[in-house]
Image (cartoon, rainbow, N blue to C red; front, side, top):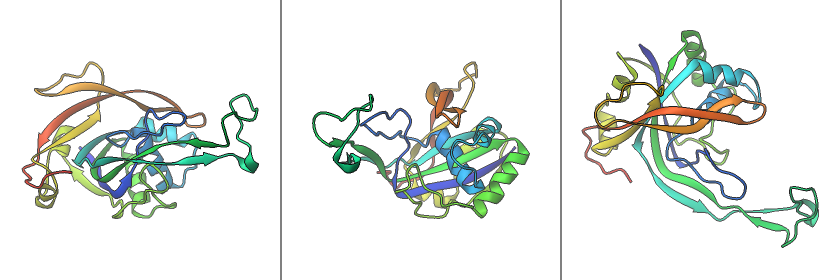
Amino acid sequence: MKFIKFVLSAPLQSWGEDARWDQRTTAAMPAKSAIVGLLGCCLGIPRGDARLNQLNDHLSLAVRADRPGRVMTDYHTVQGTGGVFLNAEGKPRSGGNTIITPKQYLQDARFTVFLWGNEETLAACFRAMAHPKWAVYLGRKSCPPAVPVRPEWVEAASPEEAATVFSPAERERCAPWVQVEMDARPNDTLGEHQRMITHRDTLLRADRNEYAVRWVKAFAVRSGGEAPCT
Protein backbone atom coordinates (compact mmCIF):
# COMPACT_ATOMS: atom_id res chain seq x y z
CA MET A 1 0.00 0.00 0.00
CA LYS A 2 1.04 3.59 -0.65
CA PHE A 3 0.69 6.24 2.02
CA ILE A 4 1.23 9.97 2.24
CA LYS A 5 3.25 10.78 5.33
CA PHE A 6 3.70 14.27 6.78
CA VAL A 7 4.52 15.98 10.08
CA LEU A 8 2.50 18.55 12.05
CA SER A 9 4.82 20.40 14.42
CA ALA A 10 4.37 23.86 15.96
CA PRO A 11 4.78 25.85 19.17
CA LEU A 12 0.96 25.88 19.41
CA GLN A 13 -1.70 23.63 17.89
CA SER A 14 -5.41 23.33 18.65
CA TRP A 15 -7.71 20.57 17.42
CA GLY A 16 -11.32 21.28 18.28
CA GLU A 17 -13.61 18.28 18.45
CA ASP A 18 -16.32 18.84 21.04
CA ALA A 19 -15.70 22.53 21.79
CA ARG A 20 -18.96 24.45 22.16
CA TRP A 21 -19.98 27.97 23.11
CA ASP A 22 -17.57 29.71 25.50
CA GLN A 23 -15.22 26.78 26.21
CA ARG A 24 -12.87 26.16 23.27
CA THR A 25 -11.03 22.95 24.13
CA THR A 26 -8.50 20.94 22.14
CA ALA A 27 -8.37 17.22 21.43
CA ALA A 28 -5.16 15.33 22.19
CA MET A 29 -4.81 14.31 18.52
CA PRO A 30 -5.55 16.12 15.24
CA ALA A 31 -9.19 15.59 14.25
CA LYS A 32 -10.01 14.09 10.86
CA SER A 33 -12.17 17.09 9.99
CA ALA A 34 -9.16 19.34 10.67
CA ILE A 35 -6.91 17.26 8.42
CA VAL A 36 -9.56 17.46 5.69
CA GLY A 37 -9.63 21.24 6.18
CA LEU A 38 -5.83 21.40 5.96
CA LEU A 39 -5.93 19.47 2.68
CA GLY A 40 -8.67 21.81 1.49
CA CYS A 41 -6.37 24.80 2.11
CA CYS A 42 -3.64 23.13 0.07
CA LEU A 43 -6.09 22.42 -2.77
CA GLY A 44 -7.77 25.82 -2.61
CA ILE A 45 -11.19 24.44 -1.58
CA PRO A 46 -13.20 26.97 0.47
CA ARG A 47 -14.98 26.22 3.73
CA GLY A 48 -18.41 24.70 3.16
CA ASP A 49 -17.56 23.31 -0.30
CA ALA A 50 -18.98 19.83 -1.03
CA ARG A 51 -15.56 18.72 -2.32
CA LEU A 52 -14.42 18.55 1.30
CA ASN A 53 -16.94 15.74 1.81
CA GLN A 54 -15.31 13.86 -1.06
CA LEU A 55 -11.89 14.22 0.59
CA ASN A 56 -13.35 12.88 3.83
CA ASP A 57 -14.96 9.90 2.07
CA HIS A 58 -11.99 9.02 -0.14
CA LEU A 59 -9.24 9.13 2.50
CA SER A 60 -8.44 7.33 5.73
CA LEU A 61 -5.83 8.41 8.23
CA ALA A 62 -3.65 7.39 11.11
CA VAL A 63 -2.02 9.81 13.55
CA ARG A 64 1.03 9.10 15.68
CA ALA A 65 1.76 11.36 18.64
CA ASP A 66 5.55 11.54 18.43
CA ARG A 67 5.45 14.36 20.99
CA PRO A 68 2.02 14.85 22.62
CA GLY A 69 2.76 18.31 24.04
CA ARG A 70 1.24 20.06 27.03
CA VAL A 71 -2.19 21.67 27.28
CA MET A 72 -2.18 25.45 27.71
CA THR A 73 -5.32 27.52 28.40
CA ASP A 74 -5.41 31.06 27.05
CA TYR A 75 -7.45 33.76 28.80
CA HIS A 76 -9.54 35.06 25.90
CA THR A 77 -12.37 37.59 25.76
CA VAL A 78 -14.94 38.63 23.16
CA GLN A 79 -16.75 41.98 23.06
CA GLY A 80 -19.90 42.98 21.22
CA THR A 81 -19.93 45.38 18.31
CA GLY A 82 -20.73 48.98 19.20
CA GLY A 83 -20.93 48.22 22.89
CA VAL A 84 -23.81 45.76 22.49
CA PHE A 85 -23.54 41.96 22.80
CA LEU A 86 -26.61 40.10 21.54
CA ASN A 87 -27.87 36.86 23.06
CA ALA A 88 -29.30 33.84 21.19
CA GLU A 89 -32.65 35.65 20.89
CA GLY A 90 -31.04 38.66 19.23
CA LYS A 91 -31.59 40.89 22.27
CA PRO A 92 -28.93 42.84 24.22
CA ARG A 93 -27.18 40.49 26.63
CA SER A 94 -27.44 41.17 30.35
CA GLY A 95 -24.33 41.00 32.48
CA GLY A 96 -22.02 43.20 30.47
CA ASN A 97 -20.55 43.48 27.03
CA THR A 98 -17.64 41.05 27.49
CA ILE A 99 -17.64 37.26 27.48
CA ILE A 100 -14.71 35.20 28.74
CA THR A 101 -13.96 32.39 26.26
CA PRO A 102 -11.00 30.26 27.43
CA LYS A 103 -9.11 28.62 24.56
CA GLN A 104 -6.92 25.53 24.87
CA TYR A 105 -3.77 24.80 22.87
CA LEU A 106 -1.20 22.02 22.71
CA GLN A 107 2.29 23.37 23.33
CA ASP A 108 5.31 21.95 21.46
CA ALA A 109 3.42 18.95 20.07
CA ARG A 110 4.56 16.93 17.08
CA PHE A 111 2.35 14.49 15.15
CA THR A 112 3.06 12.25 12.17
CA VAL A 113 0.05 11.70 9.89
CA PHE A 114 -0.46 8.87 7.39
CA LEU A 115 -3.11 9.05 4.63
CA TRP A 116 -4.33 6.23 2.39
CA GLY A 117 -7.31 5.53 0.14
CA ASN A 118 -8.34 6.55 -3.38
CA GLU A 119 -5.14 6.77 -5.48
CA GLU A 120 -6.32 9.72 -7.59
CA THR A 121 -7.28 11.71 -4.50
CA LEU A 122 -3.99 10.85 -2.80
CA ALA A 123 -2.00 12.01 -5.83
CA ALA A 124 -3.93 15.31 -6.00
CA CYS A 125 -3.36 15.92 -2.27
CA PHE A 126 0.36 15.15 -2.59
CA ARG A 127 0.78 17.70 -5.40
CA ALA A 128 -1.23 20.32 -3.51
CA MET A 129 0.67 19.84 -0.25
CA ALA A 130 3.96 20.34 -2.09
CA HIS A 131 2.63 23.64 -3.50
CA PRO A 132 -0.33 24.78 -1.33
CA LYS A 133 -2.66 27.44 -2.70
CA TRP A 134 -3.49 28.90 0.70
CA ALA A 135 -1.62 29.21 3.97
CA VAL A 136 -1.70 26.09 6.15
CA TYR A 137 -2.36 26.28 9.89
CA LEU A 138 -2.71 23.68 12.63
CA GLY A 139 -6.27 23.93 13.91
CA ARG A 140 -6.46 27.73 14.25
CA LYS A 141 -5.11 30.53 12.08
CA SER A 142 -2.95 31.63 15.02
CA CYS A 143 -1.11 28.26 14.83
CA PRO A 144 1.23 28.23 11.82
CA PRO A 145 3.44 25.15 11.44
CA ALA A 146 7.03 25.38 12.68
CA VAL A 147 8.24 23.33 9.70
CA PRO A 148 6.66 22.97 6.24
CA VAL A 149 3.94 20.35 6.04
CA ARG A 150 5.99 18.48 3.46
CA PRO A 151 4.49 15.22 2.13
CA GLU A 152 6.41 12.08 1.27
CA TRP A 153 5.38 8.72 -0.16
CA VAL A 154 5.91 5.60 1.93
CA GLU A 155 4.99 2.01 1.25
CA ALA A 156 3.89 -0.58 3.80
CA ALA A 157 1.83 -3.74 3.94
CA SER A 158 -0.79 -2.15 6.24
CA PRO A 159 -1.60 1.10 8.07
CA GLU A 160 -0.31 -0.48 11.29
CA GLU A 161 3.03 -1.19 9.66
CA ALA A 162 3.29 2.31 8.18
CA ALA A 163 2.62 3.96 11.55
CA THR A 164 4.99 1.75 13.52
CA VAL A 165 8.14 2.20 11.41
CA PHE A 166 10.49 4.88 12.77
CA SER A 167 13.53 6.41 11.11
CA PRO A 168 16.63 6.99 13.31
CA ALA A 169 15.82 10.72 13.44
CA GLU A 170 12.23 10.01 14.50
CA ARG A 171 13.36 7.66 17.27
CA GLU A 172 15.52 10.45 18.71
CA ARG A 173 12.51 12.78 18.96
CA CYS A 174 10.12 10.31 20.59
CA ALA A 175 9.58 8.71 23.96
CA PRO A 176 10.10 4.92 24.16
CA TRP A 177 6.33 4.49 23.68
CA VAL A 178 4.01 6.67 21.58
CA GLN A 179 0.24 6.67 20.97
CA VAL A 180 -1.27 5.82 17.59
CA GLU A 181 -4.88 6.33 16.46
CA MET A 182 -6.13 5.15 13.07
CA ASP A 183 -9.39 4.87 11.17
CA ALA A 184 -11.20 1.58 11.75
CA ARG A 185 -14.57 -0.13 11.49
CA PRO A 186 -16.65 -1.15 14.52
CA ASN A 187 -16.24 -4.87 13.79
CA ASP A 188 -12.48 -4.79 13.10
CA THR A 189 -10.44 -7.36 14.99
CA LEU A 190 -8.33 -5.81 17.72
CA GLY A 191 -4.78 -6.91 18.40
CA GLU A 192 -3.22 -7.29 21.81
CA HIS A 193 -3.27 -4.04 23.81
CA GLN A 194 -5.45 -2.33 21.18
CA ARG A 195 -8.80 -0.71 21.96
CA MET A 196 -11.64 0.83 19.96
CA ILE A 197 -12.66 4.43 20.65
CA THR A 198 -14.80 7.02 18.85
CA HIS A 199 -14.40 10.64 17.80
CA ARG A 200 -17.16 12.87 16.44
CA ASP A 201 -15.08 14.38 13.65
CA THR A 202 -16.29 12.72 10.43
CA LEU A 203 -17.57 15.40 8.07
CA LEU A 204 -21.23 14.98 7.06
CA ARG A 205 -22.20 18.41 5.75
CA ALA A 206 -19.38 20.84 5.01
CA ASP A 207 -21.83 23.69 4.53
CA ARG A 208 -23.43 23.18 7.97
CA ASN A 209 -20.54 21.88 10.11
CA GLU A 210 -22.27 18.57 10.79
CA TYR A 211 -20.16 15.66 12.00
CA ALA A 212 -20.65 11.94 12.60
CA VAL A 213 -18.87 9.44 14.83
CA ARG A 214 -15.60 7.99 13.55
CA TRP A 215 -14.37 4.63 14.83
CA VAL A 216 -10.70 4.65 15.76
CA LYS A 217 -8.26 1.90 16.70
CA ALA A 218 -5.93 3.16 19.44
CA PHE A 219 -2.74 1.58 20.72
CA ALA A 220 0.76 2.37 21.95
CA VAL A 221 3.83 1.43 19.92
CA ARG A 222 7.45 1.17 20.93
CA SER A 223 9.59 3.68 19.05
CA GLY A 224 12.98 2.73 20.47
CA GLY A 225 13.63 6.37 21.32
CA GLU A 226 15.06 7.53 24.62
CA ALA A 227 14.20 11.25 24.72
CA PRO A 228 11.20 11.95 26.98
CA CYS A 229 8.14 13.46 25.33
CA THR A 230 6.90 16.54 27.18
